[in-house]
Image 1 (cartoon, one colour):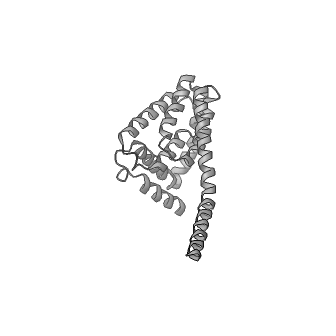
Image 2 (cartoon, one colour):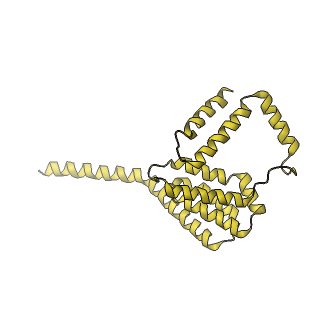
Image 3 (cartoon, rainbow, N blue to C red):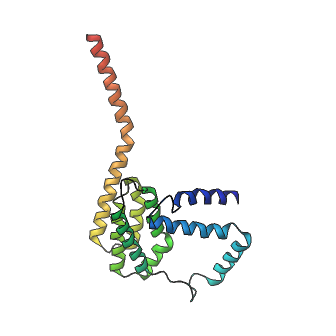
Length: 200
């Protein structure tokens, strides 16, 4: 229970609407966090929720059907929102988490089973647009999930994903060797200064 409370406080503080004004996906995430805490923090509510899920099952007739078109519409709204805000001051980690939320296992399964090719491609393109604002190290997991929903269908998007993957991998290699390069450069400068001082 302590762990649940601690996690709730941390996430609620991070995604609170007051802290993220005019941020639609932070507000939606905050509501989900509140709802989850409401259930998890009370033993009876949690037991009833588990029981209800078990009874309804995944394919119950009356279950809410999440349509791929709704996901695409949410992504259109996200990109419209991103065009209006100051991208230099935005919370990039929050955007990364939201894109992963939009590509959760459940949503990917829905897209794979129910989405027509144009909708799948639209979802992939909108996520790619939003991803432009993320640092490279956030990209690889999102790329692998986009590839899942495309299922090898759109050559143009797959080539773009391949280019982004190569760019990220180059950045990662550079990051790996950068400390060694800086150390070597520093050593070279120190030796040059020492030799210069000896010569004069």
